[in-house]
Length: 475
Image 1 (tube, rainbow, N blue to C red):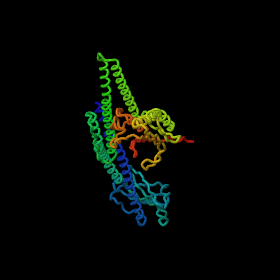
Image 2 (image 1 turned 135 degrees about the vertical axis):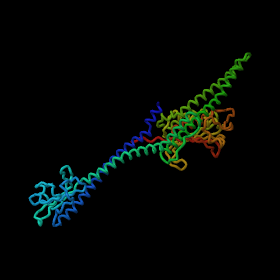
Image 3 (image 1 turned 45 degrees about the vertical axis):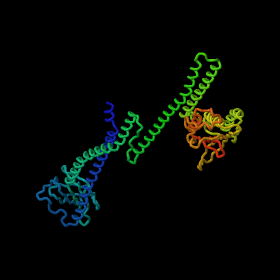
């Protein structure tokens, strides 16, 4: 029922109806205009013939002459009937052809005739006559000449034309409607094909794409746009699946360790020291699970761009100072020199809490992988140009003197659950969740910025953060 209703009110039928109605209106207007122009042309031809005849009759010694139709008794119903009448200066009829035809002009109208031709239509006994009236001049004692012709032929010709137009107009409308139906069907066929492909995709869930018509028009652009959208959706779906698989893999190990420690603690005959050791191991695994859960929540928040919705103008200089102060004690205890280098008054558009999380993650990562007596440098400033292109951004760099990362790993540094080898850590037993830099990259992307990593020529790793600068307030 719904399919039938949709087809009855489908786009193809609506297009056909609209264009058929438009064609009917255009054909009707064209037929009326053509009929009017042809009828006027026929009348103009009659007027031209009357003008030429009036010149000829005016120069003739006998203006009236014999009846053109032998035996005529004044009947003007014939198709080619003509009229010639002469009036004196007082408007009295003096001669007529046909002879039995009474005066077609009143005395007043005859006396009002001038030298210039005056053409009008006169109706006599149901017959319309096209008549030209003119004065013959003073040499004819002010006589008035009337030459006329019956419009029966014109009316017949106009009727034939109107009949032909009345017959042709519906045919043209039907042909226009049929053509519109066929053309709209051909134009909408690619749309139906894409709809069918989309229905198959929904039913099968296959990683396929829509069939894009090679029409070089808006339909082809729509097909490419929809396929790009499908690419993005499939990419997001694959990323989600990988994320769930990786998260499950990361959760499996601490849960297994925690279960093992609890089972060991439950065995009979365990000493207090062994119980205490199992509880401590279990507590560390719980902490690891808690860190992983918090990281996953932070990453989900960054993916949803929730941080960007609370973005505001942030004093980055003060934020960096607070982050450096918070990590100063950890740096001192590890024997690492923490250096800050930035001018005051730097500002950017960001969510303060999210940006502080980014700084904490990167600085903590730098401190964790910098050996004793090493250095961690936090620097910031305006980035007027990036890769030779002018920009208006704020650059924050965090560099360390640690071992850096393998060059092959740098492009994957901000991917989820990615880790470089253990040589980067100053503590071989220190293993992270692989989400710290992923959270940094996601938060920076949500803010319209970016994050990048590179190995320094002198050794160590440098993380570069780019943020849109806050524009100064007007006034």
